[in-house]
Amino acid sequence: MALYLEQSPSRKAFKSLLGNANHLIITALVGLDGIERGVVRGIPDDLRTVWSPKNAVNSARRSRRLILDMALIRAIDAIDVYLREAVRKPALVQSNGFRRDLDAAVLSIFRKLQAVARHGPDLNDLPLAIVFVMVAWRNRSAHTEADRDAPEHYLDLLRSSGDEVASRFSGLSAEMLLDGYEAMRPPTFKEVASLINAAHHLVAAIDELMLNSLDIEQFLKDVVWTSLSDSRKLNEQIEQARKRRAASIWGKDPSDRGDAVLRLLAQKGFSKISTKQRSGIVVPEVLISTLQRQTPKSVLRWARPAD
Image (cartoon, rainbow, N blue to C red; front, side, top):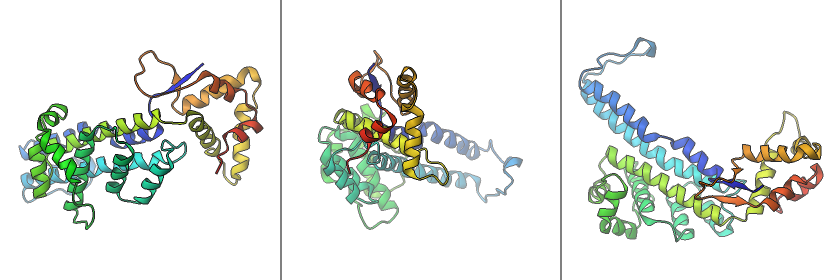
């Protein structure tokens, strides 16, 4: 039986952090609108704090800006989380050059995006352009000294693609976006929502590109090795933990071992082949069978990293 992996663990971590952010932002803005219109005049008793603004309308407007700024930061951080997770085992990024460039960027999401652009020449440029603009915009508003200017060719792309930007990102005006970036004004809800949309598109595209370029056998080995290494008990040596975990699955009777391996892989996001699949990777049946035939000792040899 072949198995299918639609999206990487890295992308799941991204979605977990960013989630349905637009809905949550709108929910917060609806609450602030209630304050501005005088529908909300006091604080619920169960909050157990004091709220006595001198001007409730001004406080609501300032809170709206804070929420949008924080949403902007959250979206950018979610992309950073995706890229950091992508180089951890099981490694989505298997290219040594791409890994070196991401490592060299250290904490700079701007430089990580530059690495993405270098190693993903087939990526659609519009989501990447919007994300670059928003990262530089955030850096300017935070008064950082580095990475304050989006690459000029991405700015040119946005200038020349106004109709496509509006079509793909719910009527977003590329001209207003770039004017706001240059003026360093606070981002609007539509701009932040478009960034979140662009972040989802960008991560989905990177994920598909990386999955399609994987050495599938090596990735499966990484998945197994990580699983064997993640179940360490208190005061247990790591090698003891791996042996115990391997024995709990590959030490089963051959009649039960195959299903135990499939359950392990299901926990890691693998599923049976779907007729609706449109992207992702397929782990061939022969590779699954090879894994199912392992013993506790042999699976440790098979999955152990070369380095």
